[in-house]
Length: 238
Image (tube, rainbow, N blue to C red; front, side, top):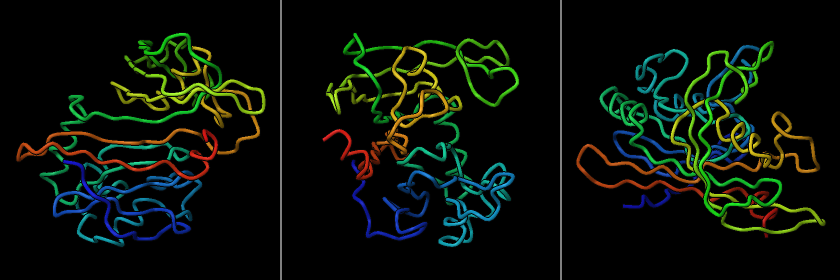
C-alpha cells in the first residue's frame, strides 16, 4: 500500500513535514540543508532528531545510540532532500535495522546529473574507500574500502543553457556514505550542485532527492513511502 501524506507539520523554515505516522514509525520529508543529527561544530542547528524528540518524546529511549540518534535507522546527507524514517519503539527499530542491513528495503532516489549517459540502464559496481588525508570518499582509494553497488535508469535527457543534463532514477543496493554522489561522479556524470565530487556551478542546491522507500511490514503488508522533490529540483528539469 502507498501511505498517503498526513497534514503538514512545519519545522526548520516550514519545510520538514510528516509524510506518514503510526504507532511504530514516522516518515518525514527532510529538506536539503537540515542535519539528521547534531555533529561537532554544529550543535546549535536544528536537526531531524530535534524534531523527533519534540514531536514524540518517548523516542528518546529508542535505538542503538538513543542519546545522539534516537529512533534513527538510516541516514541522508545534509544536502540531500527526501524520505527518512524513524522507529518509535525498540522492536520496530530492530526490525527496520534488520531490513536495511539485509538489503530488504528498496531505496529510490532522483538525481540530475551533468551529461548524457550512454546507457539507458546502468550498474555501477565499484568499492568505495576514504581518500587519504580527507573525509571524502573515492572509488580509487583502498583505505577502508567497502563493497558499493548502484543501479540507475535514465528517465530524461535535456539541455539547459546549452548544456546537457539527465534525470536519473537511482537505486543504491548498499548504503555507503556519499555512495550515489561518488558513483555517479566516477562515471563522468556528477550530480548538479555537488561541489564536493564535481565542479562548482551556478546551481547551489544538490539535485539529489530520496524519492521512495519500499518494504514489507511485520504483518506482511507492502509499504511504499514517497515524497515529491522540492520546487528547485522540479524547476531545473522543467
